[in-house]
Image 1: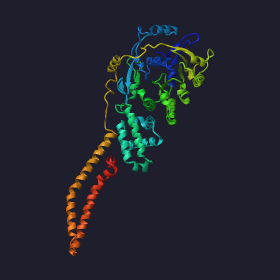
Image 2: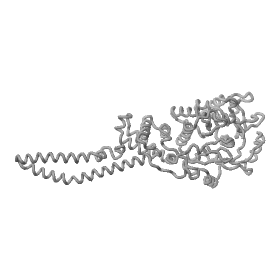
Image 3: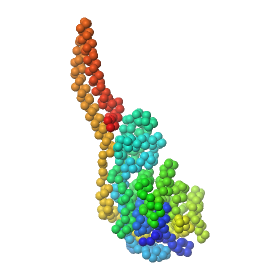
Image 4: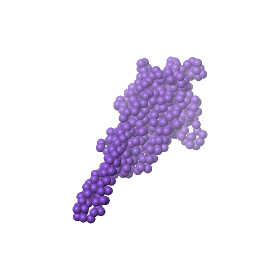
Length: 513
């Protein structure tokens, strides 16, 4: 086990040997290039290298190709000869085939162990971004989270949040006096967005048992880092959900992991594929949060590598923090493309042997223009590099192989069965049931008193026809008694029942806390 991950080389016009120093691997990186230029293989060999060095990895498998990390490569593979030839050319003398320790995860629970978080852990900021809420709607969402904390009601899944928003709507007038305007129209808009999110499968993301970060940071018996692969092919149908979940995971790592300074190797490496989805139409507050996390999380020992087609997809403030770079070919078909190509070339430290812009345009599949951080974190001179071949299988494993792997996994059984413990939905439902029972009891009392009132009123009308002093006195006494009875009944009827009619059953859920 060395302090360097071998990336590739080539000789003559290419770098003799290029490697990623583990000490600087937590200073983040970028893998960029047009479709079909070899980004997936670069990601695969980096994951292998980190795993061999005892560093756990988390990556998203957007196309389904990376499951091959769980299986050894083979001499029978159609690319075996080109692979062995390339290994010899770049001086990869100890090239062997081997599998990596892998744990498969899937938000939908089909291609991996279910991965969940709770609504509370996601928080109002990320949830508002996921729902694409307006400023007013985001304010109401913050009020709902605040009330959940004050009332001791855990928000675990979507039905918890939906039930709480119903209560907020029922009490909008009272809450507006305390928190500002709470519009029922805005609440309705949030509920509709939640319904859309639920239809996209988010109900399977929110719930328990929630993912424990320690399960992503394991090593196997041989000391190799676990490669955690999130199946994302179906998840990509909901790109906002995909990007928000990965950002949440990154934020959780930032908040929970202790400071470690500059370790000899990362504690975890996080690969964010299709990174442009995170920044498209993102509000400034969210981009600022990503920038803050990227800047500070390296002190927690976490390296973040963004994978995207064009470096221009990543905001400049974040791009400036990505010290280790693997630039595959960029195509320049339009004036905009040529401008972006020139800007990408200008971010590298020049090499007198070739023009960087020309190299980025000309490198073939499996080749890249690379720059790694060197001593004291100084960016290295840009080099043309032939990327080494992977030791694990190139391409996906079969469904049967994946199923067998899941059954033998250390995580088998821990997350598979969902847990639905008492939370906001159940608490609000219990209060609604209690309010309904009290209302029913009040109605029964009113029904029991109704014959008495009818008989009394009938007697009062009959007595009122007698015009004598005794009759007048009797009428006065009867009227006083009738008023008392009426007040008693009205008091009963305007208690729980009255509130039920005016505000609805949910309007009194927090009654008698």
